[in-house]
Image 1 (cartoon, rainbow, N blue to C red):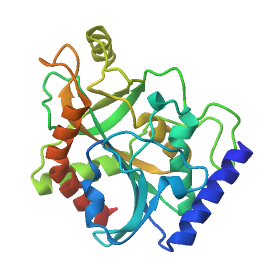
Image 2 (image 1 turned 60 degrees about the vertical axis):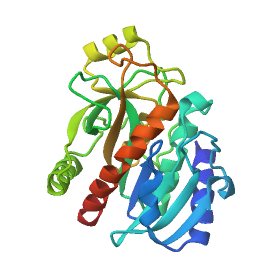
Image 3 (image 1 turned 30 degrees about the vertical axis):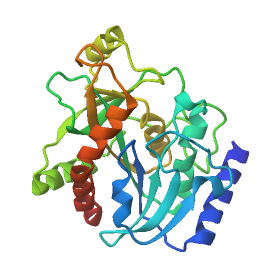
Length: 273
């Protein structure tokens, strides 16, 4: 874990050598939701491939770069593209950028994703505020030796998504006239979509939405003492509820159509953090 810490320090130092901005908030953008970074002022873009020790991904819908600048006069750093367990990364590699964001000074982390709706009341295009998560993967981004410079061996997860940020987000959604669902997000390993039987099981467990990201980063951010806000774009109804078979292209299409509302919502939130 000591090596992991030193690698994160080297990554952060490289980023700081390219941009002097001290970001207060980090944003991790899900598939098809990259439009938010387009309006950043004084933006500095750093490809992941240039950052020492950063993972490398080639998934469609992800730009794979770090963007530092201001959004609504709020200093921020945007991860345009994320890493997934199903790509073959370890959970520690998936969560690695969150450690780097912490060393850059990030206090608040906003995580977005595109996912499937399990709640029968949900429809494609809905936006959901995450209240809690279920980890269905038999792995955790904190497994292994602990480095106290990062956080405690046994971090609390009773409020993985900060209640004050959730309340602020709800008020901002109301102010923008954006319908806001709330619910529990379940992590599924992927890369195949879930079976109908798995969706029925997740529904019994209390999940409202299912996706292949977000939870590893949420766990790491809580461990590091960050406040976390999670927002889902429901891009499809889950297996057994949907009338058509799933495709990644359809996920990107619905996410793109919903991105304007997502961007307005987050822009309303940022100045009030």
